[in-house]
Image 1: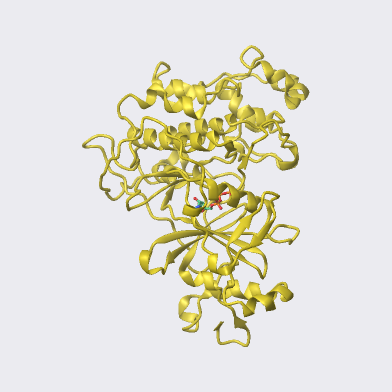
Image 2: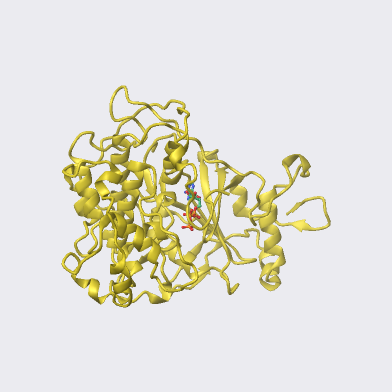
Length: 475
Ligand SMILES: Nc1ncnc2c1ncn2[C@@H]1O[C@H](COP(=O)(O)OP(=O)(O)OP(=O)(O)O)[C@@H](O)[C@H]1O
């Protein structure tokens, strides 16, 4: 127990005492992300990202989305997939906390840094290494029947200083699911891929997702790495629950031309193609052409790979496994493990900024007073979490208060319901999960080392006003 000097007592969950909470680093659809440091003697000071999931709307505890994320993540062990190190549940409000290895960067920030602060593009070696590692992680997921479904730059994490510097980690599996029944209709889930990275078959109402939706998103990310600008920036029409998003399709068709039945025979079966064909076909485009946008020679390996990722017909779209074998990765500069170093001697080293941390927002997303205003013994975040714990579900609460451990590890049974495990086993140890075997993909990127240099300032006025869709990304 911790008292904050007021009449209200705050309970400090035991699991939270393993960490020194530093502050909030981001916010997504499903909750807030915090930076913390481990206090454990063997890895004291190690940075951890803690994702707190919002309660489900029904207020009935941990949401199915969160359960899916845990089940998937606990099984996913691969160098290019973000590592889940710990799982906690606060029984007071059934809020869920997932602790991940912390990644200092993500592609959203890296691209933004080049666009807004630097006067040069991302070097070729870095682009290639980032892309190779995204594909390597994705190939692992797809080989294990997992579709990510929400790939976008902010979900592609890149490790900062340390042994894994410059290594890509695919993050945010909140929307992914195992598709053991690949043809199971997913209408009940709604449309899930963020609109700019959304594949055309989804926009036209396809009933069954395939791994090809991820490859489309990777194509969009590849183009964005080259140009520093989202390739298809459609405006989402939020007034409709159906997946048909005309403006997004419009942006795609403007660049790639109209899809045809010749190129995409199953187009005719898509519900929103049938109902909107005349409207779509009445629009005329003087196609700007993909190669002029990305400024790649049409015969280059890079352009060939990009076009195959942006193939209209999902059945013809290149797979992650095929993409890893593409000529693009065999030609100089070959990809490496540390993506954040120059490919060639003499090329500029870029120092990407650390994530901004909002140290005054507590675990409830509520702004706390500055530390100077707090009594010496209080910890604003842990205290606050305890407060939530105390205020909800008193029956369970009283039982829990007597239990020295306020958190508990989670296990999810095959029916998807959760139960708390013995508090003494509250650390979910990946080593014990018997996770999915890592698939070997080749060629393995060659490890490369290198230092960094402070960034070069200089804005690119063309992209000053670029904003991500729906919400601001940070804080
Ligand atoms: N392991 C991590 N280490 C460091 N930062 C992370 C980590 N995981 C997520 N983040 C960052 O936290 C922010 C919010 O992430 P989150 O996954 O909750 O939302 P999102 O991907 O931005 O959006 P959405 O959840 O709506 O898809 C992002 O900037 C993301 O890069």
